[in-house]
Image (cartoon, rainbow, N blue to C red):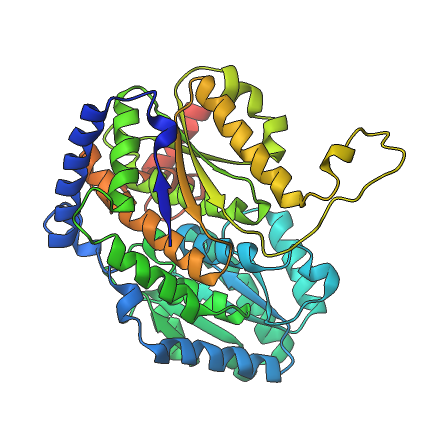
Length: 445
């Protein structure tokens, strides 16, 4: 279960102020629960943990087993933003750090495409696909978002040329709209198996839909346990009280924002959670960054980034707050040995677990940053596994909806992401954008 500790904020805010923001958070929770706020047609994620049928997971497992029986050893998941970040986060967190070097094959190897327009990246992916026995999952409601659409066009061509069009149809799965869009039409035409992205679930809230479920299952992980953890937090985060962890987190981060802490850094002391930061940045950045408002989300991995960002965090401009995601137990055990020469002076650590050193580094860092003027919000899980990740995903989603309503924005739209697309289309010569292209070319002279 996810726990929140706000003790690291006590020297920065007054109890009366915090209690005021708890009331705001409870009112925002009411808005989420009653579904009567801005963007209320995008709340389909709220009950996914408790309402997702087991048959959906079984269907994903059947595809995994079929592909493994065919000798497929590589799955390219094509998507951008919420269509890949949640799955990437889960797979990175749950995988052995050196799985590729050790050839661990509990599931299929999953790689990602469609999240970049880098020609080198896609070319090197094609090199990999040429050497391996590949299949693909393409994730897009419309099928026309530029980055994944370009990648899918190239990957589809490769699979059809290598395996034949009929066989390609069994090696491509689409996660898309139920009825409309280019990808839905193509899937019907080619006979691809499909999963549905419901209209009432936005991309950044979709990790517990087939968008995340299918890739996570293909990679060999226990989606039932992940949904069980999310289901526990679905229950806890619906409770209307001041101990609701989503209420606590949303209340405090908004109070600190109103105290001038405009940047929130998500911190983990485990490199396995690097992509939790990437997923979280999209969730909060897209949900809150609008109408001239919003906390800017950033992320770091300590202790690594203490040797690059630590100086600024400790003594730079005091506009920061930190949310530290703590992991209480390590899944592995390594003890530091005694060295008779002790040239490095580290024999005082002999007999200690490496994770004990990591835990003390975390505590020391948190205290140092508090002393340096950085408030600390602490979010903790027992360990990194499917159950706890599921709970963490749901906790941050629910807190995001509450936080956005406290802030006074629609947490479920993202009108600003279209601006770059219009400019890109005009500069690439897309029909219908000729006038805008002329304006942009003049600006670029």
